[in-house]
Image 1: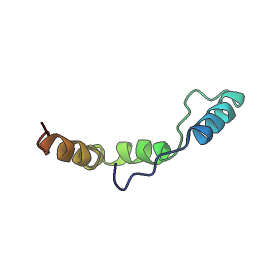
Image 2: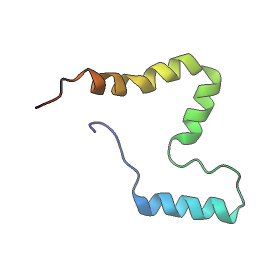
Image 3: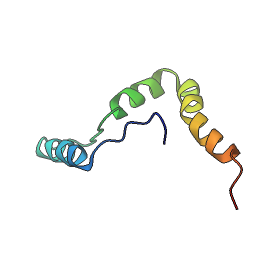
Image 4: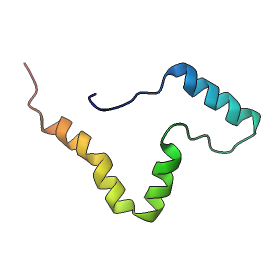
Length: 64
């Protein structure tokens, strides 16, 4: 996907193990903390923003 920074598996595992060691109930890697906060502040706006790439993907004609 264009414009998307994908987290490397090694980094995800490192963050998971760090959260597990701290006995965290929720482990939110990457931008997940920001998204959770923004979802509480402006849920409709965030849903709309996160839906745009999916809407564009679904609107593309399929090759075949």
